[in-house]
Length: 566
Ligand code: C2O
Ligand code: CU
Image 1 (cartoon, rainbow, N blue to C red):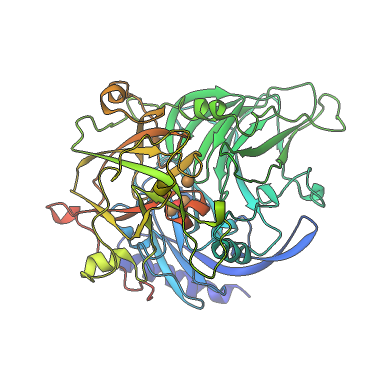
Image 2: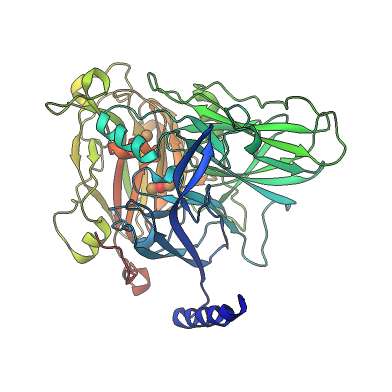
Protein backbone atom coordinates (compact mmCIF):
# COMPACT_ATOMS: atom_id res chain seq x y z
CA UNK A 1 0.00 0.00 0.00
CA UNK A 2 2.82 2.38 0.84
CA UNK A 3 4.62 1.29 -2.29
CA UNK A 4 2.62 3.51 -4.58
CA UNK A 5 3.88 6.58 -2.69
CA UNK A 6 7.45 5.43 -2.81
CA UNK A 7 8.17 6.65 -6.30
CA UNK A 8 6.68 10.03 -5.39
CA UNK A 9 9.00 10.21 -2.41
CA UNK A 10 12.02 9.21 -4.46
CA UNK A 11 11.09 11.82 -7.05
CA UNK A 12 10.83 14.54 -4.36
CA UNK A 13 14.19 13.59 -2.94
CA UNK A 14 15.65 13.58 -6.44
CA UNK A 15 14.30 17.01 -7.32
CA UNK A 16 15.30 18.59 -4.01
CA UNK A 17 18.82 17.22 -4.37
CA UNK A 18 19.04 18.66 -7.87
CA UNK A 19 17.85 22.11 -6.89
CA UNK A 20 20.23 22.56 -3.97
CA UNK A 21 23.27 21.09 -5.68
CA UNK A 22 24.11 18.72 -2.84
CA UNK A 23 21.81 16.37 -1.00
CA UNK A 24 20.45 18.12 2.06
CA UNK A 25 18.51 16.09 4.60
CA UNK A 26 15.04 17.46 5.36
CA UNK A 27 13.05 17.15 8.55
CA UNK A 28 9.42 17.97 9.29
CA UNK A 29 8.53 19.73 12.51
CA UNK A 30 4.78 19.83 12.97
CA UNK A 31 4.13 22.11 15.92
CA UNK A 32 0.89 20.91 17.41
CA UNK A 33 -0.91 20.39 20.71
CA UNK A 34 -0.88 16.99 22.38
CA UNK A 35 -2.24 15.64 25.67
CA UNK A 36 0.20 14.62 28.37
CA UNK A 37 -0.51 13.29 31.85
CA UNK A 38 1.88 14.50 34.53
CA UNK A 39 1.47 15.04 38.31
CA UNK A 40 -1.94 13.31 38.20
CA UNK A 41 -3.27 15.84 35.74
CA UNK A 42 -3.95 15.58 32.04
CA UNK A 43 -2.90 18.66 30.15
CA UNK A 44 -2.60 19.88 26.56
CA UNK A 45 0.88 21.08 25.72
CA UNK A 46 2.50 22.40 22.58
CA UNK A 47 4.83 19.81 21.01
CA UNK A 48 6.79 19.06 17.88
CA UNK A 49 5.34 16.01 16.11
CA UNK A 50 3.35 15.18 19.25
CA UNK A 51 6.53 14.33 21.16
CA UNK A 52 7.68 15.66 24.53
CA UNK A 53 10.60 16.23 24.66
CA UNK A 54 10.66 16.73 20.92
CA UNK A 55 12.52 14.72 18.26
CA UNK A 56 16.32 14.42 18.37
CA UNK A 57 18.23 15.72 15.36
CA UNK A 58 21.30 13.60 14.58
CA UNK A 59 23.90 15.07 12.23
CA UNK A 60 27.61 15.00 11.54
CA UNK A 61 29.98 17.90 11.97
CA UNK A 62 29.73 20.28 9.03
CA UNK A 63 26.32 19.04 7.76
CA UNK A 64 23.58 21.31 6.52
CA UNK A 65 19.95 20.31 7.06
CA UNK A 66 16.58 21.87 6.35
CA UNK A 67 13.78 21.74 8.87
CA UNK A 68 10.29 22.53 7.61
CA UNK A 69 8.55 24.08 10.60
CA UNK A 70 4.75 23.93 10.30
CA UNK A 71 2.91 25.92 12.95
CA UNK A 72 -0.35 24.10 13.66
CA UNK A 73 -0.69 25.61 17.13
CA UNK A 74 -2.78 28.57 18.30
CA UNK A 75 0.04 31.06 18.81
CA UNK A 76 2.84 32.71 16.88
CA UNK A 77 6.02 30.67 17.12
CA UNK A 78 9.70 30.53 16.17
CA UNK A 79 12.36 27.82 16.50
CA UNK A 80 16.02 28.38 17.41
CA UNK A 81 18.99 26.00 17.03
CA UNK A 82 20.80 26.80 20.25
CA UNK A 83 24.58 26.90 19.82
CA UNK A 84 24.55 26.35 16.05
CA UNK A 85 26.59 29.24 14.67
CA UNK A 86 24.81 29.37 11.29
CA UNK A 87 27.70 31.04 9.44
CA UNK A 88 26.41 34.05 7.43
CA UNK A 89 22.88 32.81 7.88
CA UNK A 90 21.09 34.54 10.77
CA UNK A 91 17.86 34.33 8.72
CA UNK A 92 16.82 31.01 10.20
CA UNK A 93 18.36 31.47 13.67
CA UNK A 94 14.97 31.97 15.26
CA UNK A 95 14.66 34.63 18.01
CA UNK A 96 11.35 36.38 17.34
CA UNK A 97 11.53 40.04 16.31
CA UNK A 98 15.33 39.81 16.27
CA UNK A 99 16.02 37.74 13.15
CA UNK A 100 12.49 36.98 11.96
CA UNK A 101 8.83 37.68 12.47
CA UNK A 102 7.10 34.71 14.07
CA UNK A 103 5.51 31.90 12.07
CA UNK A 104 1.78 32.52 12.35
CA UNK A 105 -0.68 29.69 13.03
CA UNK A 106 -1.28 27.74 9.82
CA UNK A 107 1.99 28.90 8.25
CA UNK A 108 5.32 27.24 7.58
CA UNK A 109 8.97 28.29 7.47
CA UNK A 110 11.77 26.17 5.95
CA UNK A 111 14.77 26.69 8.16
CA UNK A 112 18.26 25.89 6.92
CA UNK A 113 20.53 24.86 9.77
CA UNK A 114 24.22 25.10 8.92
CA UNK A 115 26.60 23.20 11.18
CA UNK A 116 30.26 24.20 11.06
CA UNK A 117 32.70 23.69 13.94
CA UNK A 118 30.23 22.33 16.51
CA UNK A 119 30.76 18.74 17.67
CA UNK A 120 28.94 17.14 20.59
CA UNK A 121 25.51 18.01 21.98
CA UNK A 122 23.31 21.02 21.39
CA UNK A 123 19.56 21.50 21.36
CA UNK A 124 16.75 23.31 19.61
CA UNK A 125 13.90 25.20 21.24
CA UNK A 126 11.07 27.62 20.59
CA UNK A 127 12.20 31.24 20.82
CA UNK A 128 8.85 33.00 21.23
CA UNK A 129 6.96 33.70 24.50
CA UNK A 130 7.39 30.72 26.88
CA UNK A 131 6.54 27.89 24.51
CA UNK A 132 10.06 26.52 24.80
CA UNK A 133 8.91 24.94 28.10
CA UNK A 134 7.63 22.03 26.01
CA UNK A 135 8.88 22.79 22.49
CA UNK A 136 12.47 21.61 22.60
CA UNK A 137 14.70 18.65 21.77
CA UNK A 138 18.28 17.42 21.48
CA UNK A 139 20.76 17.92 18.63
CA UNK A 140 23.55 15.34 18.47
CA UNK A 141 26.52 16.24 16.29
CA UNK A 142 28.79 13.26 15.61
CA UNK A 143 32.38 13.62 14.45
CA UNK A 144 32.86 13.78 10.67
CA UNK A 145 32.88 10.40 8.94
CA UNK A 146 36.34 8.92 9.29
CA UNK A 147 37.16 10.82 12.49
CA UNK A 148 36.25 9.90 16.04
CA UNK A 149 35.81 11.18 19.57
CA UNK A 150 38.93 12.40 21.36
CA UNK A 151 38.16 9.84 24.11
CA UNK A 152 37.53 6.13 24.32
CA UNK A 153 34.42 5.24 22.37
CA UNK A 154 31.47 4.75 24.74
CA UNK A 155 29.28 1.66 24.18
CA UNK A 156 26.13 3.76 24.04
CA UNK A 157 24.86 7.28 24.51
CA UNK A 158 22.11 8.37 26.88
CA UNK A 159 20.46 11.74 26.16
CA UNK A 160 19.23 13.41 29.34
CA UNK A 161 16.99 16.43 28.85
CA UNK A 162 16.23 18.25 32.08
CA UNK A 163 13.12 20.40 32.10
CA UNK A 164 10.53 22.24 34.13
CA UNK A 165 6.82 21.42 34.32
CA UNK A 166 3.82 23.53 35.31
CA UNK A 167 0.39 22.07 36.08
CA UNK A 168 -1.06 25.25 34.64
CA UNK A 169 -1.01 26.05 30.92
CA UNK A 170 2.35 27.68 30.18
CA UNK A 171 0.75 30.53 28.21
CA UNK A 172 -1.35 31.32 31.29
CA UNK A 173 1.76 31.22 33.47
CA UNK A 174 3.47 33.58 31.05
CA UNK A 175 0.58 36.03 30.73
CA UNK A 176 -0.02 36.08 34.48
CA UNK A 177 3.70 36.74 35.02
CA UNK A 178 3.85 39.64 32.55
CA UNK A 179 0.67 41.19 33.94
CA UNK A 180 1.77 40.92 37.57
CA UNK A 181 5.03 42.87 37.34
CA UNK A 182 6.49 40.45 39.87
CA UNK A 183 8.16 37.07 39.75
CA UNK A 184 6.71 34.17 37.76
CA UNK A 185 4.85 31.30 39.39
CA UNK A 186 7.24 28.52 40.41
CA UNK A 187 7.16 25.33 38.37
CA UNK A 188 5.48 22.29 39.93
CA UNK A 189 8.15 19.78 38.96
CA UNK A 190 11.47 19.29 37.25
CA UNK A 191 11.57 16.63 34.61
CA UNK A 192 14.18 14.19 33.30
CA UNK A 193 13.46 13.14 29.72
CA UNK A 194 9.95 14.47 30.19
CA UNK A 195 9.26 12.60 33.45
CA UNK A 196 9.23 14.09 36.96
CA UNK A 197 10.31 10.79 38.56
CA UNK A 198 9.67 8.88 41.77
CA UNK A 199 9.37 11.80 44.19
CA UNK A 200 6.29 13.38 42.64
CA UNK A 201 2.66 12.23 42.82
CA UNK A 202 1.42 9.78 40.12
CA UNK A 203 4.89 9.76 38.54
CA UNK A 204 6.47 6.45 39.51
CA UNK A 205 5.38 4.34 36.54
CA UNK A 206 6.80 6.85 34.06
CA UNK A 207 10.18 7.42 35.70
CA UNK A 208 12.99 7.36 33.13
CA UNK A 209 15.02 4.14 33.42
CA UNK A 210 18.08 3.03 31.50
CA UNK A 211 19.89 -0.32 31.56
CA UNK A 212 23.66 -0.55 31.79
CA UNK A 213 26.15 -3.39 31.84
CA UNK A 214 28.86 -3.60 34.45
CA UNK A 215 32.24 -2.52 33.11
CA UNK A 216 30.91 -0.43 30.22
CA UNK A 217 31.27 3.31 29.68
CA UNK A 218 28.30 5.43 28.57
CA UNK A 219 28.10 8.92 27.13
CA UNK A 220 25.51 11.07 28.87
CA UNK A 221 24.38 13.97 26.70
CA UNK A 222 22.87 16.34 29.22
CA UNK A 223 20.76 19.38 28.32
CA UNK A 224 19.21 21.90 30.68
CA UNK A 225 16.02 23.12 29.00
CA UNK A 226 14.64 24.75 32.19
CA UNK A 227 13.06 28.14 31.80
CA UNK A 228 14.33 29.63 35.02
CA UNK A 229 16.68 27.47 37.06
CA UNK A 230 20.30 26.35 37.07
CA UNK A 231 20.54 22.70 38.17
CA UNK A 232 22.90 20.38 39.99
CA UNK A 233 22.91 16.88 38.49
CA UNK A 234 24.59 13.66 39.60
CA UNK A 235 24.35 9.88 39.63
CA UNK A 236 24.50 8.07 42.99
CA UNK A 237 27.85 6.34 43.71
CA UNK A 238 29.09 7.13 40.19
CA UNK A 239 31.44 9.83 39.01
CA UNK A 240 30.85 11.90 35.92
CA UNK A 241 33.72 12.80 33.61
CA UNK A 242 32.92 15.90 31.57
CA UNK A 243 34.46 15.64 28.10
CA UNK A 244 32.56 18.37 26.27
CA UNK A 245 30.40 21.44 26.88
CA UNK A 246 28.24 23.37 24.40
CA UNK A 247 29.45 21.14 21.52
CA UNK A 248 33.16 21.69 22.13
CA UNK A 249 35.56 19.21 23.71
CA UNK A 250 37.07 19.81 27.14
CA UNK A 251 39.89 18.26 29.10
CA UNK A 252 38.32 15.42 31.08
CA UNK A 253 37.01 16.73 34.40
CA UNK A 254 35.83 14.09 36.87
CA UNK A 255 33.34 15.15 39.55
CA UNK A 256 30.55 13.81 41.75
CA UNK A 257 28.08 16.28 40.25
CA UNK A 258 27.78 18.93 37.56
CA UNK A 259 26.14 22.36 37.56
CA UNK A 260 24.30 23.18 34.34
CA UNK A 261 22.42 26.34 33.47
CA UNK A 262 19.49 26.78 31.11
CA UNK A 263 20.92 26.70 27.59
CA UNK A 264 24.03 24.73 28.46
CA UNK A 265 24.78 21.20 27.31
CA UNK A 266 27.30 18.79 28.79
CA UNK A 267 28.77 15.53 27.53
CA UNK A 268 29.80 13.28 30.42
CA UNK A 269 31.25 9.78 30.52
CA UNK A 270 29.83 7.45 33.11
CA UNK A 271 31.54 4.16 33.90
CA UNK A 272 29.21 1.46 35.17
CA UNK A 273 31.54 0.31 37.94
CA UNK A 274 29.26 -0.45 40.88
CA UNK A 275 28.45 -3.94 42.16
CA UNK A 276 26.85 -3.22 45.52
CA UNK A 277 23.31 -2.81 44.23
CA UNK A 278 21.50 -3.06 40.96
CA UNK A 279 19.78 0.34 40.82
CA UNK A 280 20.99 3.90 41.35
CA UNK A 281 19.20 7.22 41.09
CA UNK A 282 20.32 10.02 38.90
CA UNK A 283 18.90 13.30 40.15
CA UNK A 284 18.70 17.01 39.44
CA UNK A 285 17.68 19.84 41.70
CA UNK A 286 17.95 23.63 41.55
CA UNK A 287 20.83 25.93 42.38
CA UNK A 288 19.43 29.32 43.43
CA UNK A 289 21.54 31.87 45.27
CA UNK A 290 19.45 35.03 44.93
CA UNK A 291 18.10 36.42 48.20
CA UNK A 292 14.31 36.55 48.27
CA UNK A 293 13.93 34.66 44.99
CA UNK A 294 11.25 31.99 45.24
CA UNK A 295 11.75 28.73 43.39
CA UNK A 296 10.55 25.17 43.01
CA UNK A 297 12.67 23.26 45.53
CA UNK A 298 11.97 19.72 44.35
CA UNK A 299 14.09 16.92 42.85
CA UNK A 300 13.65 15.03 39.61
CA UNK A 301 15.08 11.54 39.25
CA UNK A 302 15.76 8.75 36.80
CA UNK A 303 17.12 5.26 37.44
CA UNK A 304 20.21 3.42 36.23
CA UNK A 305 19.65 -0.34 36.28
CA UNK A 306 22.44 -2.92 35.97
CA UNK A 307 21.72 -5.82 33.64
CA UNK A 308 22.07 -9.43 34.75
CA UNK A 309 22.84 -10.75 38.19
CA UNK A 310 24.04 -8.07 40.46
CA UNK A 311 23.99 -7.04 44.09
CA UNK A 312 20.69 -7.08 46.00
CA UNK A 313 17.76 -5.04 44.82
CA UNK A 314 17.30 -2.35 47.42
CA UNK A 315 13.78 -1.19 48.11
CA UNK A 316 15.00 2.29 47.38
CA UNK A 317 17.98 3.06 45.14
CA UNK A 318 20.69 5.34 46.50
CA UNK A 319 20.30 9.06 45.84
CA UNK A 320 23.30 11.10 44.70
CA UNK A 321 24.88 13.70 46.94
CA UNK A 322 24.08 17.11 45.48
CA UNK A 323 25.16 20.48 46.91
CA UNK A 324 22.75 22.61 48.92
CA UNK A 325 20.51 24.86 46.81
CA UNK A 326 22.45 28.05 47.55
CA UNK A 327 25.97 26.63 47.43
CA UNK A 328 27.56 29.28 45.18
CA UNK A 329 31.09 27.98 45.54
CA UNK A 330 30.04 24.45 44.50
CA UNK A 331 28.49 25.79 41.30
CA UNK A 332 31.13 28.39 40.47
CA UNK A 333 34.03 26.02 41.23
CA UNK A 334 32.62 23.43 38.92
CA UNK A 335 31.83 25.80 36.04
CA UNK A 336 35.20 27.53 36.14
CA UNK A 337 37.23 24.32 36.46
CA UNK A 338 36.40 23.40 32.88
CA UNK A 339 39.18 23.78 30.31
CA UNK A 340 39.05 23.36 26.56
CA UNK A 341 40.77 20.26 25.22
CA UNK A 342 43.27 22.33 23.24
CA UNK A 343 44.84 19.36 21.47
CA UNK A 344 46.47 19.34 18.06
CA UNK A 345 43.25 18.30 16.33
CA UNK A 346 41.07 20.51 18.58
CA UNK A 347 43.13 23.66 19.19
CA UNK A 348 41.92 26.59 21.29
CA UNK A 349 42.02 29.65 19.03
CA UNK A 350 41.77 32.33 21.70
CA UNK A 351 41.81 35.93 20.42
CA UNK A 352 44.95 37.41 21.98
CA UNK A 353 45.21 41.02 20.82
CA UNK A 354 41.68 42.20 21.19
CA UNK A 355 40.52 45.15 19.10
CA UNK A 356 37.40 45.97 21.06
CA UNK A 357 36.74 45.74 24.80
CA UNK A 358 33.14 46.04 25.84
CA UNK A 359 31.94 46.10 29.41
CA UNK A 360 28.28 45.56 30.20
CA UNK A 361 26.47 45.47 33.48
CA UNK A 362 23.73 42.88 33.81
CA UNK A 363 21.13 44.02 36.30
CA UNK A 364 17.71 43.29 37.64
CA UNK A 365 15.73 46.54 37.82
CA UNK A 366 12.62 47.87 39.50
CA UNK A 367 10.47 50.33 37.56
CA UNK A 368 7.71 52.45 39.01
CA UNK A 369 4.30 50.86 38.53
CA UNK A 370 2.10 52.60 35.98
CA UNK A 371 -0.88 54.49 37.49
CA UNK A 372 -4.08 52.52 38.21
CA UNK A 373 -2.15 49.27 38.15
CA UNK A 374 -0.82 47.10 40.92
CA UNK A 375 2.63 45.63 40.55
CA UNK A 376 3.94 42.64 42.45
CA UNK A 377 7.62 43.67 42.45
CA UNK A 378 9.37 44.85 45.64
CA UNK A 379 7.53 47.80 47.26
CA UNK A 380 4.92 47.78 44.53
CA UNK A 381 7.38 48.22 41.67
CA UNK A 382 7.45 46.42 38.32
CA UNK A 383 10.48 44.17 37.93
CA UNK A 384 12.69 44.56 34.90
CA UNK A 385 16.24 43.85 33.79
CA UNK A 386 18.90 45.46 31.64
CA UNK A 387 22.34 45.36 30.07
CA UNK A 388 24.32 48.58 30.45
CA UNK A 389 21.20 50.20 31.84
CA UNK A 390 19.20 49.59 28.65
CA UNK A 391 16.19 47.37 29.21
CA UNK A 392 15.64 45.71 25.83
CA UNK A 393 12.26 46.32 24.24
CA UNK A 394 11.18 43.78 21.65
CA UNK A 395 10.41 45.70 18.43
CA UNK A 396 7.31 45.30 16.22
CA UNK A 397 9.36 44.11 13.27
CA UNK A 398 12.50 42.02 13.21
CA UNK A 399 15.87 43.76 13.48
CA UNK A 400 17.58 41.61 10.85
CA UNK A 401 15.20 42.54 8.04
CA UNK A 402 15.15 46.17 9.19
CA UNK A 403 18.96 46.19 9.02
CA UNK A 404 19.12 44.38 5.67
CA UNK A 405 16.49 46.53 3.93
CA UNK A 406 17.36 49.76 5.74
CA UNK A 407 13.96 50.15 7.43
CA UNK A 408 14.15 52.95 9.97
CA UNK A 409 12.50 53.24 13.35
CA UNK A 410 12.88 49.59 14.38
CA UNK A 411 16.13 49.73 16.36
CA UNK A 412 19.01 52.03 17.24
CA UNK A 413 22.76 51.44 17.15
CA UNK A 414 23.55 53.01 20.47
CA UNK A 415 24.09 50.16 22.86
CA UNK A 416 26.82 51.58 25.14
CA UNK A 417 30.32 50.06 25.15
CA UNK A 418 30.67 50.77 28.88
CA UNK A 419 28.27 51.13 31.79
CA UNK A 420 26.75 54.63 31.59
CA UNK A 421 26.97 55.04 35.38
CA UNK A 422 29.98 53.86 37.28
CA UNK A 423 29.22 52.82 40.86
CA UNK A 424 30.16 50.04 43.22
CA UNK A 425 28.09 47.46 41.30
CA UNK A 426 28.31 44.76 43.90
CA UNK A 427 27.82 46.79 47.09
CA UNK A 428 25.45 45.43 49.73
CA UNK A 429 23.28 48.52 49.61
CA UNK A 430 22.70 50.63 46.53
CA UNK A 431 20.68 53.82 46.08
CA UNK A 432 17.14 53.07 44.91
CA UNK A 433 17.28 55.49 41.96
CA UNK A 434 19.87 53.23 40.31
CA UNK A 435 17.25 50.50 40.11
CA UNK A 436 15.48 52.23 37.22
CA UNK A 437 16.86 51.63 33.70
CA UNK A 438 16.15 53.14 30.29
CA UNK A 439 13.97 51.21 27.90
CA UNK A 440 14.98 50.80 24.27
CA UNK A 441 15.98 48.62 21.35
CA UNK A 442 19.68 49.30 20.92
CA UNK A 443 22.21 47.17 19.05
CA UNK A 444 26.01 47.16 19.13
CA UNK A 445 27.67 47.27 15.70
CA UNK A 446 30.92 45.32 15.33
CA UNK A 447 33.49 45.48 12.54
CA UNK A 448 33.93 42.27 10.59
CA UNK A 449 36.63 40.09 12.17
CA UNK A 450 37.13 42.40 15.13
CA UNK A 451 38.50 40.58 18.17
CA UNK A 452 35.99 41.30 20.89
CA UNK A 453 36.26 41.04 24.63
CA UNK A 454 33.04 41.43 26.55
CA UNK A 455 33.10 41.70 30.32
CA UNK A 456 29.73 40.90 31.84
CA UNK A 457 29.46 42.61 35.21
CA UNK A 458 26.77 41.41 37.58
CA UNK A 459 25.24 44.00 39.90
CA UNK A 460 23.48 43.82 43.24
CA UNK A 461 20.62 46.05 42.11
CA UNK A 462 17.31 44.71 43.48
CA UNK A 463 18.94 41.27 44.07
CA UNK A 464 22.17 39.79 42.80
CA UNK A 465 21.93 36.33 41.29
CA UNK A 466 23.91 34.23 38.76
CA UNK A 467 22.97 34.98 35.15
CA UNK A 468 23.43 32.36 32.40
CA UNK A 469 24.33 34.67 29.50
CA UNK A 470 23.94 33.28 25.99
CA UNK A 471 25.24 34.59 22.66
CA UNK A 472 23.78 33.59 19.30
CA UNK A 473 25.98 33.12 16.22
CA UNK A 474 29.21 32.44 18.11
CA UNK A 475 30.95 30.35 20.66
CA UNK A 476 33.17 32.36 22.98
CA UNK A 477 36.18 31.65 25.15
CA UNK A 478 35.63 32.25 28.85
CA UNK A 479 38.97 33.85 29.73
CA UNK A 480 38.31 35.16 33.23
CA UNK A 481 35.88 35.56 36.09
CA UNK A 482 35.80 36.89 39.61
CA UNK A 483 33.68 38.19 42.45
CA UNK A 484 33.15 41.89 43.05
CA UNK A 485 33.85 44.57 40.45
CA UNK A 486 35.97 43.95 37.35
CA UNK A 487 39.25 45.85 37.54
CA UNK A 488 40.93 46.12 34.16
CA UNK A 489 44.47 46.49 35.50
CA UNK A 490 44.31 43.80 38.12
CA UNK A 491 42.09 41.21 36.44
CA UNK A 492 43.25 41.06 32.82
CA UNK A 493 46.69 39.83 33.90
CA UNK A 494 45.06 36.74 35.43
CA UNK A 495 43.21 35.67 32.29
CA UNK A 496 43.56 32.15 30.95
CA UNK A 497 44.49 32.67 27.30
CA UNK A 498 45.84 29.14 26.86
CA UNK A 499 42.99 26.68 27.30
CA UNK A 500 39.85 28.56 28.35
CA UNK A 501 36.58 26.69 27.73
CA UNK A 502 34.63 27.46 24.55
CA UNK A 503 30.96 27.99 25.33
CA UNK A 504 27.76 29.55 24.08
CA UNK A 505 26.21 30.10 27.52
CA UNK A 506 28.09 31.02 30.69
CA UNK A 507 26.90 31.56 34.25
CA UNK A 508 28.14 34.95 35.45
CA UNK A 509 28.62 34.54 39.20
CA UNK A 510 26.37 36.47 41.57
CA UNK A 511 27.89 39.86 42.34
CA UNK A 512 30.81 38.99 40.12
CA UNK A 513 31.94 39.22 36.52
CA UNK A 514 32.94 37.04 33.59
CA UNK A 515 35.13 37.97 30.60
CA UNK A 516 34.52 36.33 27.24
CA UNK A 517 36.33 36.67 23.92
CA UNK A 518 35.26 35.94 20.36
CA UNK A 519 36.19 36.84 16.81
CA UNK A 520 33.36 38.69 15.07
CA UNK A 521 33.69 36.71 11.85
CA UNK A 522 30.01 35.88 11.42
CA UNK A 523 28.20 38.71 9.61
CA UNK A 524 24.61 39.23 10.67
CA UNK A 525 22.34 40.10 13.56
CA UNK A 526 22.87 38.08 16.71
CA UNK A 527 20.90 38.11 19.92
CA UNK A 528 22.53 38.06 23.33
CA UNK A 529 20.49 37.46 26.44
CA UNK A 530 20.17 35.91 29.85
CA UNK A 531 18.84 32.37 29.40
CA UNK A 532 16.58 32.73 32.44
CA UNK A 533 13.31 33.23 30.61
CA UNK A 534 12.05 35.70 33.22
CA UNK A 535 15.13 37.90 32.74
CA UNK A 536 14.79 37.73 28.96
CA UNK A 537 11.20 38.97 29.25
CA UNK A 538 12.38 41.74 31.58
CA UNK A 539 14.95 42.93 29.03
CA UNK A 540 18.37 41.51 29.99
CA UNK A 541 19.21 41.36 26.30
CA UNK A 542 21.08 43.11 23.53
CA UNK A 543 21.83 42.58 19.85
CA UNK A 544 25.16 42.46 18.03
CA UNK A 545 25.28 43.47 14.39
CA UNK A 546 28.42 42.17 12.70
CA UNK A 547 29.20 44.00 9.46
CA UNK A 548 30.03 42.25 6.20
CA UNK A 549 33.64 41.62 5.26
CA UNK A 550 35.19 42.77 1.98
CA UNK A 551 34.96 39.59 -0.06
CA UNK A 552 31.65 38.24 -1.29
CA UNK A 553 32.11 35.07 0.77
CA UNK A 554 32.27 37.25 3.87
CA UNK A 555 28.82 38.70 3.36
CA UNK A 556 25.53 37.90 4.90
CA UNK A 557 23.68 35.36 2.70
CA UNK A 558 20.51 36.56 0.97
CA UNK A 559 17.24 35.95 2.84
CA UNK A 560 15.27 32.78 2.10
CA UNK A 561 12.17 33.32 -0.07
CA UNK A 562 9.72 32.31 2.66
CA UNK A 563 10.61 34.66 5.53
CA UNK A 564 7.50 34.79 7.73
CA UNK A 565 5.65 38.13 7.43
CA UNK A 566 4.82 40.20 10.49
CU1 C2O B 1 18.73 28.97 23.83
CU2 C2O B 1 18.36 32.81 22.50
O1 C2O B 1 18.50 30.89 23.15
CU1 CU C 1 19.59 36.61 34.36
